[in-house]
Image (cartoon, rainbow, N blue to C red; front, side, top):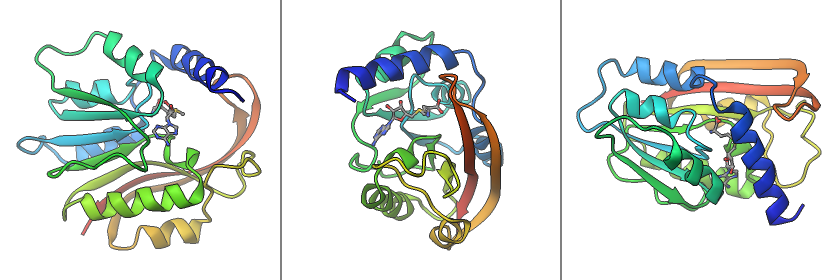
Length: 201
Ligand SMILES: C[S@@+](CC[C@H](N)C(=O)[O-])C[C@H]1O[C@@H](n2cnc3c(N)ncnc32)[C@H](O)[C@@H]1O
């Protein structure tokens, strides 16, 4: 797939999911903080056109919104954003972007598995190091029975591998979903997903 085909694919994806509510992993993590911490800061890795970012801003968090796709950030910035909100869009790969000091939450919905294994593990190492005690990670990882598991350049983890990576965290959500369904682009797919909300001890 050329870069331009990939960009067109993502643009269609953003368009199609535009009006969906924020992910449950994100709202669960935000709820778990109770009142947002003073200077609450979240980095959203693979933010797309801002499905979750809008909710983070609505709840008064400062947001660093990261995506590797220019169209994602363009569409995010074209959305009606809450007055006085504090959002920093960053065009970068999630496995390379610096995670800001003072971050309370790292949210990455349906994006980390799109990294090849070395990049995935590098990203996770950096996330776990950057989070303070009491900080949270929310997002999705993919399991080995997902029908995309034969695609190169992506990461799939067994339940045990996922749990091992989450050692040192209290699991506030670890829901394993396995079901036949269709992708947002209308293709049949077997989903094998771990939905995660984890609090660093
Ligand atoms: C499936 S979409 C999810 C978007 C959004 N988080 C959501 O839940 O709707 C995945 C997003 O991750 C971005 N992405 C994929 N690989 C990435 C990487 N290595 N670094 C940064 N962004 C990446 C894509 O451009 C796309 O916007």
